[in-house]
Every structure is written in C-alpha cells, then in structure tokens.
Length: 114
Length: 116
Image (tube, rainbow over all chains, first blue to last red; front, side):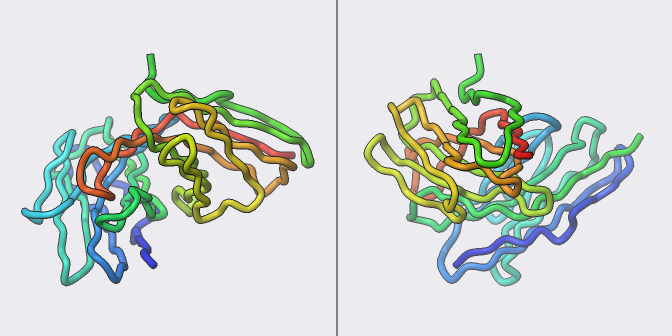
C-alpha cells in the first residue's frame, strides 16, 4: 500500500524568503508524484508532477520539486515567495501503470507574511 | 464557465436525512472521482468511475453511494447522514491520455456539508 507524509502542517515564512515544503512517500512499486495547491475557498489545481526522467521538475508560479528515490522524498521549493502563495499544498502519489487514483498527504499550510 | 461544477456549494442537514451532492463537467473526461477533505487528513477517495458503467469503491466508501448518470455527471449520496460526514467534498475529473496513473485531475470548487 502507498502512503504520503507531509512533515509540516504549517509553514510560516516572510515574503521574498525561500521556502521548502517536505513530502515523503512509501510504496513498493514505481510511482508518479504530484503537488497540488488549494487557494482559499477553491478546489485543488496541479502545480507540478514527476513521471520519469529528470528528477528536478519545474511547475507553475516559480515552484519546483526534486524527486529523490533513495530518500523516497519529493520536496517542493520556491526561492522567493509572495503573499499570493499563501495556500494549502498537497503532495500526492499514484502507482505508475495503474488507475489514476491519487493518495494524498495531510497537507501543508503555507502562510506568507509581509 | 467553470469546467467542473458542484451543487450545492454549501449544505446544512440533520442526522438521518438523505442528501445528494452533484457534479457536472464540460471537459469531456471519462474518469470522475469523489473525495472528502478533513482538516489534518488531506483528501480521501470515496468513489471513482472510469466510465458510465464502471464504478469503484475508494478508500472510505462506507455510508456513501454514487450514480454516474452520464459521462458528464457523477452524483454522491449520503443515504442517512451522520455528523462525522461533516466535511468538504470535492469532485474531480481526469483524462487518461498519457501513461497510466499520470493523468492530471481537475477539481471542482467543493461542497461544504454540515450534518447536525
């Protein structure tokens, strides 16, 4: 069975500072990895995904994530955050070759302060 | 217009009542999903459907049922609502155009359900 753990429930950071949101997964088979963002009172939207190939994945709004197979991690990073990045971020995993079902982490709330 | 819509957006109901949440999509996707979101637990899959005749239970299907009326419509029912079904419910769609398991899911705005 797969599982996803997001190590921080809340991450406060000042505007223009760098941020890293941590995600670790567990799976006995090959997986695809995703980061979704949920802005206040909205549904989720895809930030980026890792399928194969280069372990550094770039997404929308200046975010990037690095897949580390040995550490089973997929941490999300941004070098300089804006107030508008305040949102909840979800890491998710699906088995490669399977059904498209996603297993989500618990979520991390990013709070960007002026 | 939004590609994935959910109705109602907010609902307050009483224990024991039957309630239906509806989801419609204009993306032309075959795959549809229902999730519930609870604080600190992330999203959990309730049911999913890969076409009109293919419906499957997810992680937490007990107490819920679904109906796929057409490619574009997927409804979630609570036959007898209970307070621990109070949550934010999301519908999502996807298109398995790429490698299996890699399709992006598109989410509706959510329905906030409160069961008293």
